[in-house]
Image (cartoon, rainbow, N blue to C red):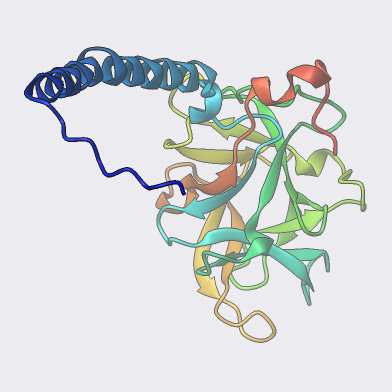
Length: 248
């Protein structure tokens, strides 16, 4: 019959060898393994740094964003509610709601032109802003606004995002390109008025929302806007598409 053997007693020599092996392995961890892990981490960090888009500090063609009026802290907003007077076009307002999806606008080239997705927008460029939900463009014209009698600002165009020259706005900013943390003004090309907030609020059906207007003077404190939430397109995101343009 087979018998189970007990554990063999370790000799002093074997203990010394085992202790020596343990110390060698411990030393190897500190001199080889940990530096190797650190080197791998550095390589990964460097790769992420190289691949991180450098242009995303700019607002670019094809970006989708929210604009907030600096003076009144309301976001530029639109919805399928038409003005009850004036042009009767889709109304544009300011809203205090941060999470409202009706405050997103797509940055496009001026009417009749296209720009490459991801190209930083230059100060002085003429652009359009397309309301993402309704496909209509930020628009103005020589029509009085409902509450203050200033110039009406509306959303206008077909379901493909095409309107007319009343959709064109010049970007006014302080550097070479539209920086995401910069304050800007938008000057309406056809009428030379500035996108602004009047401070007056609407009643039903858009209670509490603020009137957006065309302001005559660029020195008005109500004409300053800043970029808030958004998706900012970088050229590398569209390398495979080469010369794909802004029209969606």
